[in-house]
Length: 635
Image (cartoon, rainbow, N blue to C red):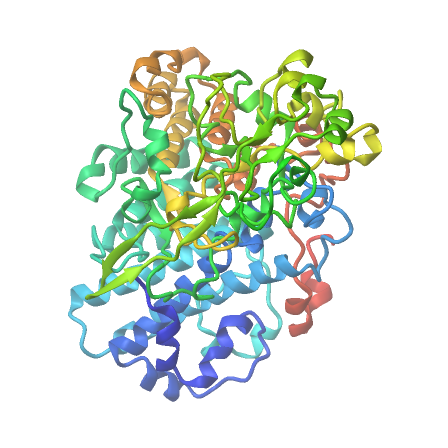
């Protein structure tokens, strides 16, 4: 694992400025002699690489990345939180905080990579092979970072020179074309894929050949949106095919289904998280020593997608404090769109495709540490059958511990967790539902009789959305204020195995995984020459592993069904919440007001002339001389 925090002590204090100000081009130029001394040793040089990796800890599992990479799309909405990204309102401007962090963070990573590439030849103590492998890491970090920058901001600053060597010309930055930026991205990722080792051993989180190949395939495919589609699609297909065909050699594979558990379910099992064979590039979280940026303050993703468990849920027996399994419910932030719940995923009970159940929580349990009795006020308020008066919802709150593990020569005891869903997880009356369910938010319809007769709050898409597909609000009337805060909650990053409390989830977060590469290969085959036969083979491999073995055939599709629109929907089924949707829509030409309003009718202010890129941060504009000439991307 990269010990990023400890390695900060190996750098001269003046160099720490680069982490937050690498893009402020009027910073003082410190002596390059100081840098050369610092980076002559492998320890000092590798600190540069560690700082490059540092950026990912602030974008994956944190709002700064989620907002930019997942929101403002066809899949998510919020009327109350982080509206800059979800609503394209006036708060999406040059001063917007998360946008500024995104820009500065990835340009900081680029600067560290530039420093590493520049000083690599001066490092003492490396063999030629070691030096080349380290430089390959720097090229990867730079290429990957520029990929994020160009997809968010378009034709902005391209620099391969470290900030320590900046000149007066850097105060007058010029925009490079997206094509030129992609030339560097592809060159960097090609170098990385050719020179990185197959394995980084026990140093988890460092990029290896499999991740570089996967990211190169992704970059080739994304490049198709700028022209020469067949050429770059062909390169994407060849690269993805190499990784898929030689996956065991490169140290990765898909999980395969069994008679009782789909491969997709195994993918998200907590027991597999730290040794996940499908993860190609990860935010590696050290749950034992906290050698991570922010220490143990990790795993915030789930709280942004959480339904309300402290007010509406509390009427039925839930509490925020003891719902650690779900995550802290104080944000009531991002909710799935009707399109995601009822068109992307098939709105039926017990579908063959297990991806919905392994993407969302729909059952929320009594977590009060005591049984909860249904009273007359909630029967009246929610239109429940009078026969439910006095019915008991069983307490499910209890203690959970992963127990003891052995790490780095010492025993580690994981904290005991108080959470719902631990005890009384039974169905004693055999009605098909656990006796501790307080709130149920399925994505499929239920009859009025079913909803009124079940001894818990039921909120189906009929209650979650208006007839026009918009999310209900208090203005919708009736129980709109309550139902607007009840919805399925993202659960990919909530395996109880790695929960430390209702805010901290200490599992690894995948940035790229093999399932994505199969989808890249399928899409590339279509974009190259409409080869549906090749595309369907990759698609069906993924779809079959989403079902238990006895139901695999229910998910196979024919070659004729595999179109680009089908693949875009399949990417949502497979990758929901994994911070890829913005670039997907950009590549498919779907970042338009017409498309977004048809799939996410709550988005009414998308401006086709402006919103396909994000605003240039004011902090950067204030640091350059030619701010007016450089522009704000229209904001």
